[in-house]
Amino acid sequence: MHAITRQAVSAYASQLATLNSVPSAAEKFTVAPTVAQTLETKIQESADVLKRINIVPVREQQGAKLGLGIGGPAASRTNTKLKDRATRDLSTLDGTQYHCFQTNFDTHLDYAKLDMWAKFKDFQTRVRDALVIRQALDRTMIGFNGVAAAAETDITANPMLQDVNKGWLQQLRETAPERVMDEGAAGAGAIKVGDAAGAHYKNLDALVMDALNLLDPWFHNDTSLVAMVGRDLLHDKYFPMVNVKQAPTEQLAAQVIMGQKAIGNVTAAAVPFFPGASILITSWDNLSIYWQEETRRRMFTDNAKRDRYENYESVNEAYVVENLGKAVLLENIELA
Image (cartoon, rainbow, N blue to C red; front, top):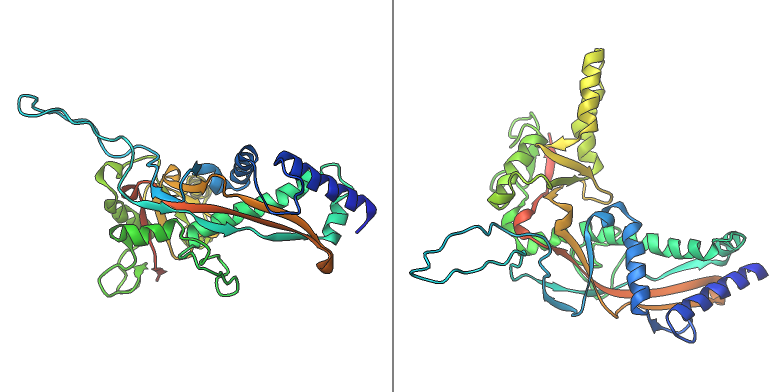
């Protein structure tokens, strides 16, 4: 490691310790509340998906959901000659619990990489952003792929972080199976879409329009709904429109359709790390990540034996679907 790099890293570690009011960042410490909140904001701003959802602190490791967002209808009438008027909770409380599991974000930066960055004036920002962006991407991946919170994870067996925590799709599978469609008919084993014999739907539009009936009725025409989908399904839907020789008027029409991507009259959003044969219909503000206050721990230390600086960081977090009645999961989609 170059001398200038050593100075830059030492300054970064010293600043880290000062911000958190600890003597040294090389010993495990609890991140200061204001620093933790700032870090959470940076993480949220580092991924497009996270910018759209709720990321909120909670006091307890487990408990009832916060019920963010507005629930069902509240308008009513009561015959007060017979009984008192009763209020209704505007939030989306349904008795479902959340549980924050510890997630470790342990990473390292090789001396060689630090040597490259040391010459830049924004060295500390580069180090911070490298750590923050990875956490943002991992949270997105867990949200759409997580199925369990294993005592010990295996990145080789679960490259999409399936065993780190239970993500939003898994929350639906476990707590609202009636809002999960994984086959077009009983015993079919899949939702078959296309013109082939035995297909359950002619196209993805028909599938999504039918699936909207699984939502609570007051959400059927909600304009905030989004069809979250992997790029492969969007490609299969829209590529045939452009992969043909077209007259100028037809080209213009195709461009308009491509510019307003929708599936079954629901705005389509291509989401990174999303399972390829699935569609999640909900609104962005119906998805949340809860992080438990005062649980972010950190240590930034030199490991000369491996020629690198290591950042050990953890926080307790949970992935939550706020209103189960405003979410439908379609999976095992087969295009025929």
